[in-house]
Image (cartoon, rainbow, N blue to C red; front, side, top):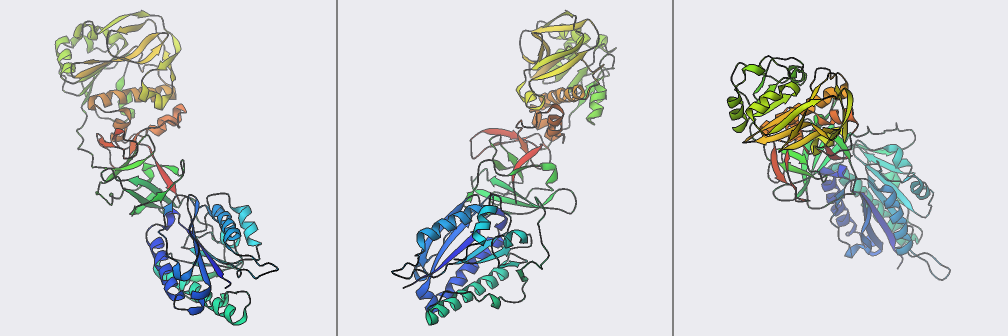
Length: 553
């Protein structure tokens, strides 16, 4: 018995998530039900299913209609149309019996391709070859309002498009497919000639149109959809979060979708600033309201951040140093020193007139109880008096620009391995530390350090912002200030930046370090949420940040 091969290619890209893929599966089941009622189709039709997303895969080899069972379709990132056409050619060469001098082979295969028409692989040459193949009868069916009609006509001379990828549209499409197959089967049985689809019987209405050269071309907007590939932190189950580009700036979330399986390719997707994502939909498994990205690249749901305690900042009178300028630049509130340390973070400006009236014992108690002290250059006597033996100081002859090595790891992620510091006066104070950590070092000498003391910390720099007018130098001062703010919270640089809604990516652009990875999270700022990544097992603290990995559709 000569067979009528039917190959159905299904676009399983993430843009089909939700109603489109469910409607297509429902329509396919209805198509099979109709075909099995037709004795001619039941006797002659053999069906194969090929899906394509990140890669192309044949789920069911050419199988007679009575034995055919619909496979479970797996969505994935990407639209490997070129891979699907290549695989189809390979399977036809392997599965379809060719006519020889001794016997007649199978009838001309019927091919139906369901796609959103936006390939992500190299497909053009394979499509051109496919279009010239007269041994196939092919119909391309465009799914949804964002179909690239130009692509459809480069695959087949006959293409149709449905304005909506919903159940009604797919039901109409597949009812037409089943009727066409049944008609072709009956025609074969009565004439013994090649099957020919009744393309002129395409149903009218329902938003279904024939694509031809007279139809206005539709090329969808680039990056109209963004998909976050997420994992529930509690259940470790996978889900997609879908966004659509809004009429203004950014993207609006349209929903989340539970998926048992999802196929992706390493490195697939784009980076999108969390500032462009209007909001985050709750996790469909545990209802966590936020998401964050681990340094391994995985996106996971996060619980609500704990409430934020306002930072209390106090500064002394300015002189050679004026941290008020840096605080104003970051729009941070502060109060002036009036004899008491009623704050979380205390800035002791170099040469300040307040230096002489600071009580060493009270300053010691402030830090010991958890306060953060920042002092610069000529404020070193206050450190010597309040914290004997913590640091030692001497004069120096630094002048001009000095290249400093960045020894703090999280600061390196933002500014790189070296920075320039401008010393405009001599002598500058140089310190050595008996405990603590060097943040910046120049000519083997530490020029910025942090020393833990009791429950608090003491920061000291040999330089200040008297002449730091360069864009990078200003950015560095702000980052160093953020380090101190983070110390008062017990938070990292990225965490405190997220809390204050400061985008570290902007600083990375200034220093040319955009490729560095920073832990980030979407949602409102907060002191940070700890979570364990379901993929790599790393525990991190997340807060509102810079960018997040996403798939683009």
